[in-house]
Length: 203
Image 1 (tube, rainbow, N blue to C red):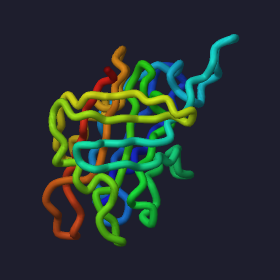
Image 2 (image 1 turned 135 degrees about the horizontal axis):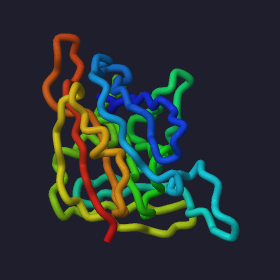
Image 3 (image 1 turned 30 degrees about the vertical axis):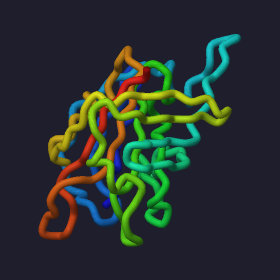
Image 4 (image 1 turned 180 degrees about the vertical axis):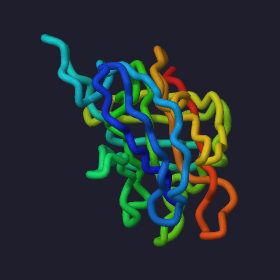
């Protein structure tokens, strides 16, 4: 099923990322609690103006997870008109996306990749993400072909009603990567009740 929509409320504080409300695309629950607001540095957002003379890092273009046979281009994911974070369209279920409101993968901060587990069209790009193990390699290539290798430090299955927003999206001095998809049992409407989160850090 699809990963979450997140609904940021814009903050006037430059270092505050707005509260993220978890709702799900087709096939996933839309009833979730509002987590605590995370904090990040705006200097790592691709939408922030670069310092004079500074070269803006290239956007990510591809993710590969050799241990589970995943290779995917990356769609840029921004915000919908209602303020929720976009997820890849259902008909592009085999393509993951990068949330442009977070860090650029390989830069300091939390970079977030979102992908479907499955969609109405069948299994999707992160279908086997639950098989990933601690120590696994994740490779993100940017538009210039430069590769950053990340090492998985852990995984977590969480209820969508208790999503650890600050832990996932919050400010960090690490060059961190998070992968998110749906997981767990299904509710009465056939929606998965959990999210699977993979945590990794750059080598």
